[in-house]
Length: 276
Image (cartoon, rainbow, N blue to C red; front, side, top):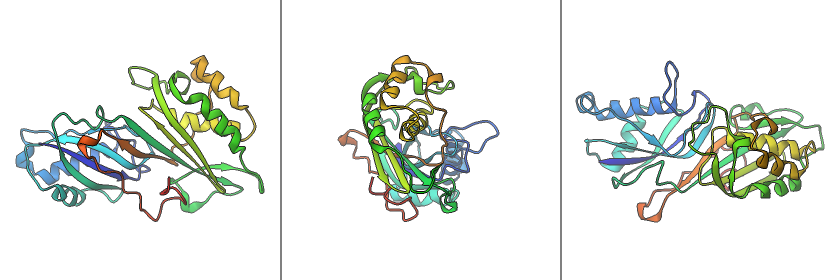
């Protein structure tokens, strides 16, 4: 039986999604909880291995992560939710579970991924948003040039080689990805980036956000980001921005699988993030 799960998690306590030696990771905690719920006898001849829609970095959060795994154990869908959650730390929650066909893959069936970056800016950081949002120091009564950032975003729409925004540790087979949309929402003292594409490279969203902020602060013009994209040289883009405000927001799948959407009604989220 193949089961898909919808997850939310606070990524700040973890060294990212993927299992790593001597590191606490989201995948490691989830697979441990699944094994505990399934039971030792059922796990003797079957190791629980989860496949994810997107491997988030250390400190990155998820509102709508999707994973799947195969199991010989039969349970009601809600039993998976209630049972697995009872073994998970409070920073990780299973929102839904669904029995899916064997041709479903959380990773390869997905055709669209959306990330949201929530940024707080001003003279002082907000301690209430520690690890929940990015932060940039701005003098009083100043703000970003949002229209310049929006103009820059247009250079990135479509299919491109995103090598200039790719981590040196990226394991993707190709740097060519398709960007569907980039929305920049200004609600001072908040700034939100909603970035939607077919797939993303390691650190790609954080590198884009850092580059947008250089433009928003007037240190680069909008055309610069197109020049960086064309150069295919990581050294030309901005440094990788902090992970704190990055959320894997939504994964889209073909309609025949009827995969539920993310639960975005959390009152703790930064202002307006739910509406995005």
